[in-house]
Image (cartoon, rainbow, N blue to C red; front, side, top):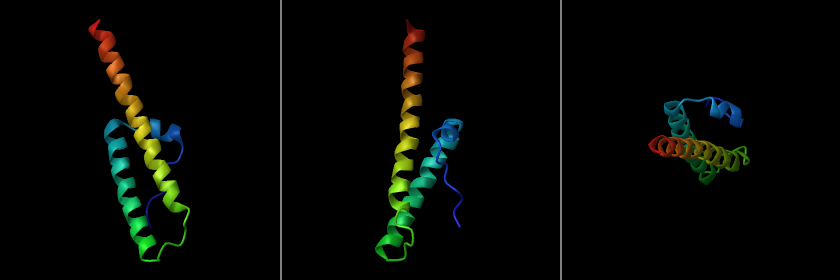
Length: 79
């Protein structure tokens, strides 16, 4: 059984950068498995697919926020 997915943005924001990348990778693998189950008609919970896609979007949004914050800090330090 897969481990429970992190769903709250607060929990995701607490992750370090390498942990965030690892979580994104694991979630993409989970999405692949869900899609495979859907195509082979083995998927029992059909709400899992959109939930996983939204989690990926949430993870990538937080990753992008961090990238923009680093860029702003670097630009501010250069002035």
